[in-house]
Length: 199
Image (cartoon, rainbow, N blue to C red; front, top):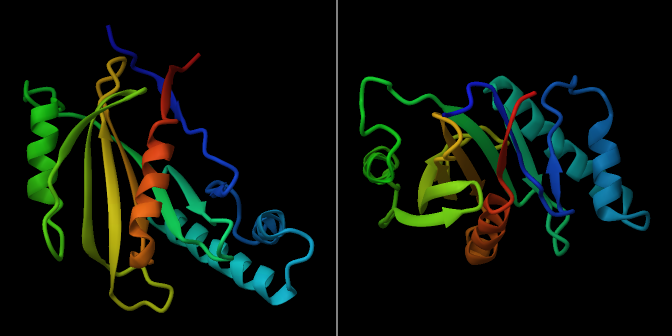
């Protein structure tokens, strides 16, 4: 028996910032988050720039009605290096193959074709359930200047056994030189995903 009502959660490390998607953009959380991440000795202009970046991504995710979003600000750089989004998708009840690992692998390969190179789906096991992982380079229009750019993305499509829905965690970044390190961070985040029955 599967759960009709459920909730998901992520347990990110301290360098991830959960975007308060239900809060107004002028609540002042951006400045507080930037100050916590950079520390008291950081130059004021660095804090102001990071707060502006957090504000941009908050507005972007609110406009796109993203249910859950987190921004990664690594220790080494005072900037948003990656954005993680978590969505849920209902499977077609009339398609018995929908949501199976084979179905996920096939659909990700077809619907998430990279802009450059190849992206081969990889079947993995996460604490939340069986999953398909896909990493590739994609064209993205969500640049702060409004222009198209090449980004790297790791997707974890997860099928928790307790629910009928698919959970898709997508982590995206534009700092391609940091690809392996940020992919590692994305994988670490995916391992913290959990699903609980709503009370």
